[in-house]
Image (cartoon, rainbow, N blue to C red):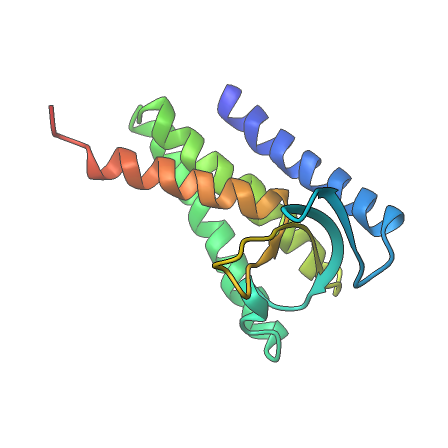
Amino acid sequence: MIVLIAAALIFLADRVTKIWASKKIPQGEYREIVADKLYIANIKNKGAAYGFMAKYPELLMACTSISLVWLVKSLIEAFRNNASLTEKLGLAFIFGGAAGNVFDRARKKPVTDFIYIKHKKWKNAPVFNIADIFIFIGALLYLFKNLTKGSK
């Protein structure tokens, strides 16, 4: 049950923070939170990471929708096979985040990205959102658990 609650909370946190950023910060602007390091912004992204596939919104929507179906199937299998909590949480984190971004795209709107970490070595650091963070963490958890399966 905690796995499903985690996915729902991630989706909800993503929605609330995107709405907040959209209302509080004018589109295209950045506000400094930590001097020359952390910014809150309001960037509209019509594509995936770095605007990938922005020119093909229907294809992007199809790919992300197929991914959501795969995630649901994988979560069901994880529960049926009594997979570890780490594996189930990894999938739930990915699902919660992906559902947040797909929700925006399904409404024919660009995804709101609002977290920017400035770093002198990253000239084109991405602007991202809560969904992206949990997709990344979930992928790490899932990958870690599957790479260590069977090893003692």
